[in-house]
Picture 1 (cartoon, one colour):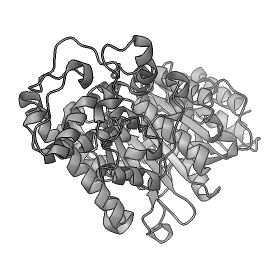
Picture 2: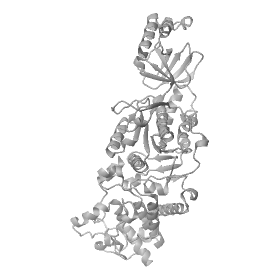
Picture 3: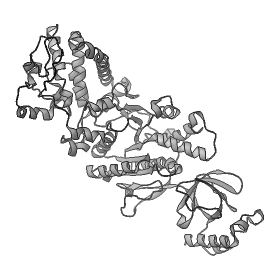
Picture 4: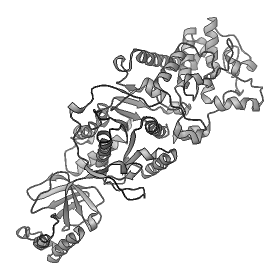
Length: 589
């Protein structure tokens, strides 16, 4: 009925001629026949006309009622072209940004005011579905049912409703819970490029949240590639986490207005589960920089004067309007993990600076650690969290985290000396530091549930208590006799393999003369990070004797160290194979 009325008005306007209908003295008469038709209907419509089209910027004239800011307008056949009002130019004209491609839009076309802003579907019916910014399903599934429609423009929760208690959000991932604890109801930034395991890390957090905390996960792709969205949907479906998940995408080929609003639509869905369903929500945004970039494009289209480095002058307000809605209230919490792209690695860029001010934790993924097979490839020295204070995490947790960072930092400083002079030139205390640091690095690795089908390793969910106990026992040299490979890709510390005999740290390493069939069973468990096992063994032997390690033969050293501590060329260690190719490939995807 609505489309038929619009078509009738449009035909009337075209019959009179676009030029004549746009004359000032006839400006109020072009809809006379259409208004006469609407008088006999029960559907009140506010109709206007397109007067100017410049790319995504459209100017329209309304003679009766001027639409308010953020109103959604429909133009074209069946109202397929959607326009959001951004400015009122005068008493009759408004300027809007098209949220869809403007192909086919022309001057003189009729415009319908929907009477409200852009809305998003909320309710239990949105679970396991994929949407675009308009709430249309794009997964080729059945039509939506049991949903409501709410405006995407909502105010942040008032201070009276916010929770003032800082709580830790446990992810079940050791390195995050111990060194970079997340805040329940807070925001965490995930910094990393392609191939370092960012998608796998996000997928694992979704799995842990749904499977063990009865929460809802919402993935919001801002400026996302179509390929990445399809792959994520397929992976979530295969992993079995789709029933409690919602995906919404504003793809990079869509107009900037659509990419700018998709984040608000995702937050509207998240607020429903927090406030109405009283459930915790995990909101993953990829990429928050694309939101700022889309706002910059819209600002340029509207003719605003850019600020420093070409960003929009209202960037801080726009980002705050989105980030402040992510909050912990008395009914539930929205915990957000956001991928942040830093242009040209310049952390003084205005986009990065404004984003950092909203984050409670920064997680940095290291390509170097990923190349070493240490997954998740989180750099513990570059990552930080505001929650890592004695008053929030406790004195014991804070002390252990500081000791771990200190040990890893000392090991990083000693790497250059080891590369130039050799491990035997270090003092016994420094060798002990190296041994502890290498064992900590391997203990902080963890097999993921979402990669079980590729790696063959069963996923592990480790509680914060078990993770702290393991780190404390390693720092106390309780596992100095355990080979490094025994700490790689395990869950709790009790799973470590005690294969070495007391007093002989290198006993667990196979001689190079051992047949290949004997070395293969241990090779399956002790992957590449165990390749430098004898380096830690030298540190252990030296720390016991208090002097330089004794010369070893190639048959007993396992890595072929000569009497002076220099590695022999050529021999292959039976207990130090390369990491499984499928494991590394999966995390790098």
